[in-house]
Image (cartoon, rainbow, N blue to C red; front, side, top):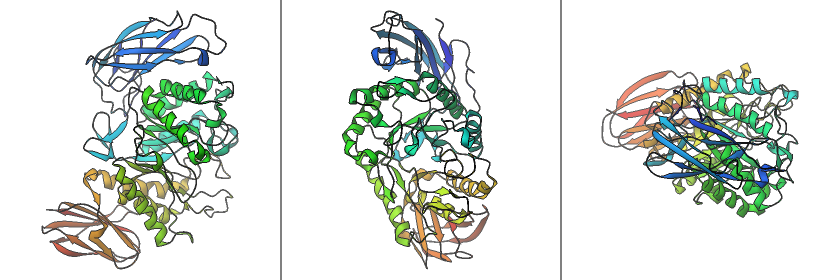
Amino acid sequence: MKDVAVGVAIGSMLAGVACAGSVPRFGMFEKSFSHAGAYENPYKELTATATLGRPDGTKWEMPLFWDGQAVWRLRVSPDLTGEWSYRVRSADAGLNGQSGSFRCVESKLHGSIQPMKGHPLHFQYQDGAPLWFFGDKAWRVLQTDPTKKLDHKSAMHHVDARAEQGFNYMHTELAGTGGLASGGNEGGELFVDAGKEIINPAFFQEVDSRLHHINQKGLVFGMVVLYGMGDPHWGSLLSDEARLRFARYVVARYAAFHMVFLVSGEWQYMADKVDMFRAIGREIRKTDPHGRMIGIHPGPGPYISSQEFADEDWMSFGEYAQAYFAPDKKEATDANRNDLRNFIMAARKHNKPVVDAEYGYYLRDQDFDGIVDKPHSHTRDSFRRASWVIPMGGGYFVTGFGTTYFGGRREVGPFFVDDPRHKDAVADLDRLHRFFTSLSWWLLEPHDDLVKADGGYAYCLAEAGKTYVIYVAGSKGADLKLADKKYAASRHDPRTGQSTALADAAGGSVRLEAPDTQDWVFLVKAK
């Protein structure tokens, strides 16, 4: 069979741009094979593994995956330019000994994400470009629900919209969200029979198509492999052997994409299975030669953590939390806000990136009475403030919108990314994102000891003596302690993006005046 080179694009590059017989660096090489034997369930009965020779002389081991009938596929994302080779070993005569090569060429692709070298609490792409992690929750973007007008076309329009809005990460899952009885798509359900380990390749083929589109639009995705509850979930597979086999299959199929593996969603629903999740995390790490980041998503509650796994070798995050902030609700006192901030800051002790993957939803209005109806649902002002609290603590977030985050199931109306009610909130998030990416944000550390507000609250990020970012809310200003230098100061309106130059500052205590008690951002930089 002829080798196929597929360039999975990031940014403006599209699939297959490379010249014939070559694949772009951080793109995707795919090769199909056929088994020769007769098998009742090839997924369960047969394995095949390719040894890949890399241009630097090192080797990768990558499993192939069964894709229906007699078809098996090898997928790999080459990280080095030059000649690559592969040879397959398998108990099946049709697969064993298959070999070939391909050439990897330079490209403009960034690759997937990883901790930043020298600054491991932050992110970069594989090519070294820094990344301010800006995530959107899209639990069901790989699924189909005719009752909510969620299908391939509307899901991919959601991806297009988020890419246009500047998001660079999308948190999703294969199937089984939150107790739903169906996580299927146009290809059908994930399993024909989970207990018997009979998978449905057509389901995965539809997932493949959607994930290619997500990468092509410049987004990295985080995929929950299976949930801790629902149908299907990790308990639907009836043995440790079955669960590890499924983990290997998902790695074989998806590690060549620009992605993050999430071992489970809401793992606390199987809190007695911590060792099981640890074993799955280890299996993913062992199976994936690309070294994709791995996380695990915790369950419901005000501050629910994944730090139980933070010091595991496979766990790439210091925290991948479900930690809510509800600043305009009775449940949300100053203690609530400060507890969340302290929770985020404390997770930095693991020296890995900290992500609040579920901190609040914009206009989550399930009964559609015009009033947000859950303690962590938000209107514009509270949503913006919640979104600033996390990065001011040195963390990152995955945000969410009521009409999209759960495939439309948290609204009376349909799945609807173009809801005009979202416009102001999206613009506020865009301004937040642009503000941080205008700075060398990875050099900034939380320094609340340097700032004090009259009332309300004030937070500070600083590279002491060089750059200070102050976020103030509920106060008409704050006092900032500066190292002994001369500084330029400015005030930024997070609602409009307007910037106002302030008087230059010197060392010592400096007063930063706000026009009112809304939230304001100050930037002070050494001259």
